[in-house]
Image (cartoon, rainbow, N blue to C red; front, side, top):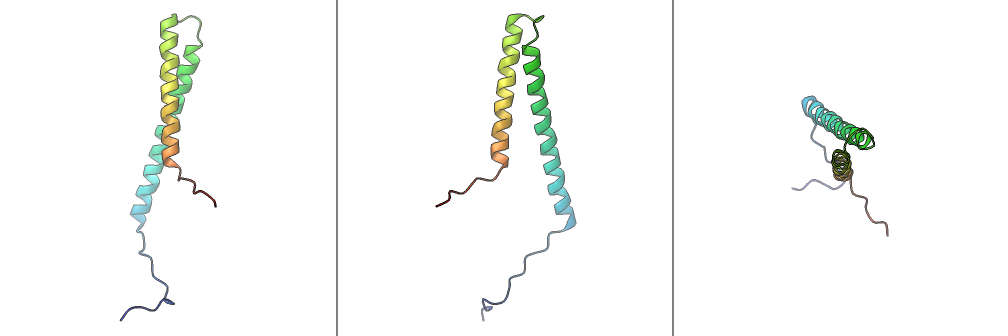
Length: 86
């Protein structure tokens, strides 16, 4: 006998340690994202330093740009996709 459609289905209870694990993973991800963003800002600032040789400044700028693009890619993957509205 199949359950009637009027009976609400019960969702399985998520245990506290799974919730804690999810929170810890999100916090670790946020920390790593902030570290990458800080490294990018530091490299952008050092690329503007006039006392450094030109090649070192160019490499700092290129590294900062790559790290910033990586941060944007990680952020795009972490956010849910928007659904097209019709």
